[in-house]
Length: 611
Image (cartoon, rainbow, N blue to C red; front, side):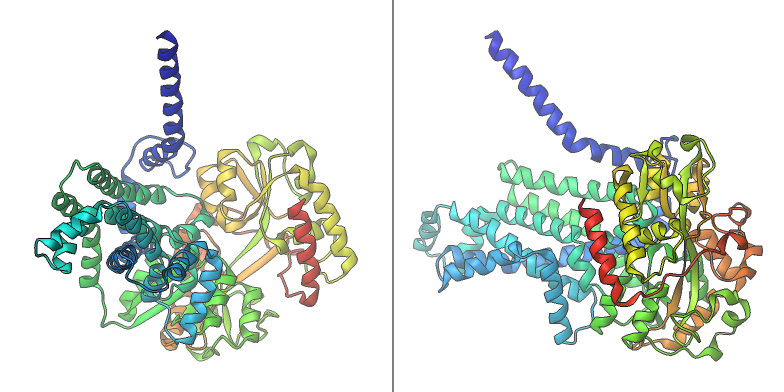
């Protein structure tokens, strides 16, 4: 008896530990959504300000509404069509059922990237503009299988004699389905609905390929925002989603156990759905559909809500902005030719590629007087667009060296610090082939754009020797590791560190004495832009000194508009990471297209990452 008691005690502890492992991260997320500090790893007291901030954050709010809209529509379509298909298959009324079973499972077995590419090609062939409609269609294609499988499993365990008895008593097939089959399968249908909604709501990869204008979903928004670290707003919106999900799970469990009537369950489910859908209806009623629309596609860190509101007010239009997380994602969208973006913000090297592929429209320079009057000539007429026919500079920065002064205990001035064995296990490099090779080449005294195979090989060998010292390769939230003290030194983009340095004064940023990458992101207009003149008005408006200063204050990145400095908040203006001394840029280089030798870079990078 004592042994059995001890066994039960141990089992209870094990169960507790399993649940703790599963739910502790969720509990931490909820608690830190009320944390006064912006640093996710530091507790500074309770506050509800992040929920207030969330309510005024148009990007997150719109993306959340898009996710809810897509999830609800996809769930409704999949439940109706999937349930009918499951009934037909379960009752053996379809010829070639083994082949159909294989078709049903195929969307679940195909890699997501393959399905994403297939869907993009399919929509391009149909000349369908990428939008929320294409997102809904895409999600339906891979979610409907869940309904057929789950409901089909419920039907397989159902006693068919009950249906036969109903029909013997005079009920036709439709009445039998409504009165007998549907109530018996309701728990399975509700479970399938929850599974579909969750799968649709969470999807990132396929959505990133098929989303178009005004169709950024919450996963796309959050993934793009991760380049600035996990913010309290993300914790807050995740908590709200969790709060909405718990009642649905509770209803499904009660219905499955027979502890809740079918009508009560569906009424509860409908109430939660309507509660989530209410903001969507409110937005649709308040949307300015009759105003001119400007569609922007850019990085999440490059949009200032104040600038958007000011432009909308002055030009009586509505600005829509969708987000990408890489230049390659932008390229893929424009190559598809079925998106209606008016303004994009590619990096310098990508501008050259877009020009070569004839994807950009020529600018009407006469409509951009603020650009030519205010932009630093250093950032004009660069090699990727020698006469600024297709692009004008939007923001610029450097890729230098960040470190924790309280952990390194010495001034860092050289890339040599990233190769110091004393800091082994606390060094971060960017997960970017050209940037990492550029750092190594600069340390060796070579150009980061070298095409000399021997110099590239030397950089490879140097990086191979450094690999055991490196904690990881990270270009999404390296500032978070620095804030938490997990990393002591990191190769870093300066603009990503602006607010991290404000919140954690021990983080320092330097341009190494050997030099580093200097980059400029540019405002461009796609060739098929439907509102080209309005896009040019936005570019010109952005380069007003006071407007460019709002961008710096809100986003933390510098602009090539020196006249903006007088309007910039003093703490940013005094930060050399954002406003470096001109002499420190003397050995910096813009990244260039290196041509066919890029294959050698790729091969060596694969060797380094695989080691």
